[in-house]
Image 1 (cartoon, rainbow, N blue to C red):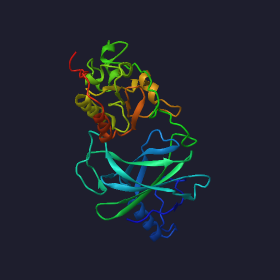
Image 2: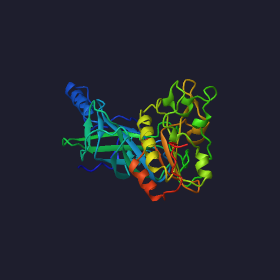
Image 3: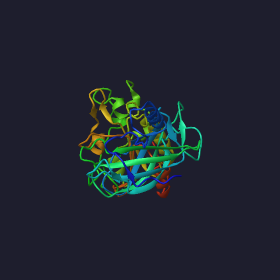
Image 4: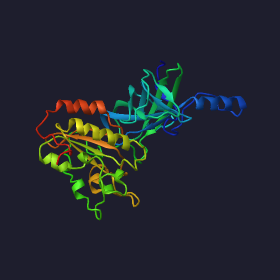
Length: 339
């Protein structure tokens, strides 16, 4: 695999692929440029709460220009602060990012190298850990050596929602923070009038029954006050823009059945009224920032009521289950099936 260059041109000025092809007006040059673009990669930063600091979780959605999803294997990622000269950015850090499928929506196959999936089910991102030692904007270049032997590259910059770039501190509860004592809506709150079932879980639609009642029968505050670890998922299964929330919520419900003796599992719906774009108070308490709100989010809260781990956007099932396996089983085994 080729080494990434230490410098990239106009990474921040344009999120499109940076090409070395000629840019003259001749037809051959234009055709060469178009073919190169077609072979490039579209890169989107899928992380929600990046801030200055070490060991940040960087998620990248990678696709071809014709919308083929890149899945499986590892890719090489180079990043660097944009600084004062966006036309000449130095890529100061190189890391490897591994494919992370969306729980419940895993692509079929097990290729050891990145593969382009066109028109096939399944979703996922690439996950890396990076050190962001400066505030402001950052540039990214991705290089992928595909299973067919070709090498493709793509570039982007982040963040998009924050006009001043990444800041010094996280905007969403981070590891070590005291968790809010949130009293989210549960199945016991549903009365069909002021509290509809869809306010507890959007999958309920216009019905009166909340699906997967075992992840809606307690509050985050209940678990913390009982001294139990809590796994809290903030997701809107029906209205999620990325379409990640539905599969993740269903997988979360399965995990609650398996590990309900180790932690309290709580799903918090995002919307009180989707049409009016009104958040549930419980969701706003955790994920609303001055730049808006993103979901899904998954938090692990320890027995002392502090955030022990968090996963923005795509939940890392292996990482969560590893944390859960460390927790002792307790006599509190009910997950909502008994009552």
